[in-house]
Amino acid sequence: MIDFFLSNLLIKQIALGILLVAGYIIFKHIGRKWIENLAKNKRVSLQRTQFVVKSFTAISFVLFVAIFTITLDLGFGDISLFLSSIFAVLGVALFAQWSILSNLTASILIFFVFPYRIGDKIKVADKDEDISGIIIDITMFHVILRHDNGNIITYPNNLILQKGVTKLVATKEKIAPLNDSSETKS
Image (tube, rainbow, N blue to C red):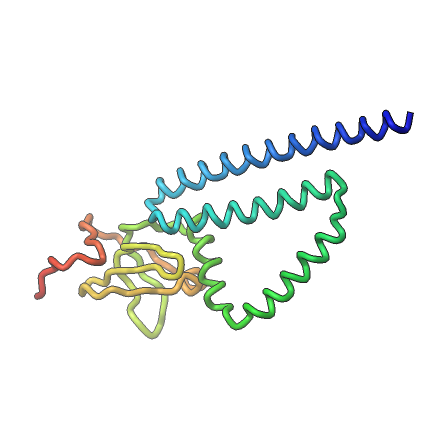
């Protein structure tokens, strides 16, 4: 009787494991398609879209492993101790790089919630300088603006989330790419 129960439990765990893997694959596929559609609607560059998709994939994999080990009772205590140790070491080691990490995190936030798109004319509320222009690109670290005088302004993502941004009424101008050398000098 005990042998039947153990084999039945093993069959249930295998079936549950297969179900969890299938659910993860479906979730990852749907999430990726949603992010790609959102990026297309917001006119986001391919590199930034790939960065957000990779971040989504990594986070969903970590969550899948946690759910998988908890559900199948595979000794999550040992795995969580190992993962928490890794995160503690990474947290201390990367503390000096907080600015870079905050820009990457801000890039993901901008991807999902920033209300302005490439081609919009904006002004950042900065009392010291005139930070305004047309958004020509939003990268992983900077929002790149073309000022009215033709200068290119790169503004860090983490600062653009911290400051007030005003959308200015702009005439429909053609946005020249960064490497366009056909600009006329006045």
